[in-house]
Amino acid sequence: MLDNDIILGGAVAVGGLVAGAGLLAFAESMGERGKARGGGLSDSMATKLSGALLEDVEVDSVSDLGSLTDKLEAALKESGGADAKELEMSEEDKKRIAEEADDGW
Image (cartoon, rainbow, N blue to C red; front, side, top):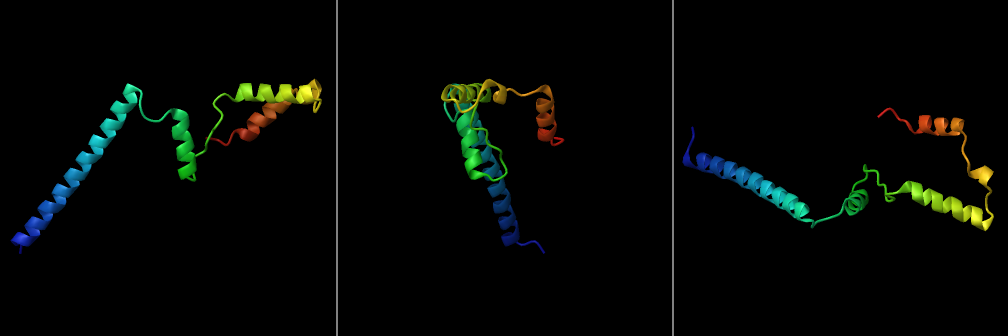
C-alpha cells in the first residue's frame, strides 16, 4: 500500500512546508530587527504604500489634520473668501457631524 515513492513524496512535502515556514519566520524577524535599528519604512510611508496597493485600506495622508485646517482657514480669511462667522461651527453642528461620522465600529 505504501511504497517508497509515496513515502518520499510525503517527506519532500513536509520538508518543503517546514522550509517555507522557516524562511517566513526568518524574513519576519529580519524585518523586525531592521525596524528596531531605525531602518525600514516609516509609518506614513507604510500607510501610503498599503493605500496604493490595497483597495480596502483607508489612507490618512495628513498626520496633523488640525494644523492643516487652521492653515486653510487662515488662508480663506486672508484672501477674503470667508469671514470668521462662516468658519465657526456651533456645538450642534459638531455633534451632528460626529453622529454622522460614527458608523458603529
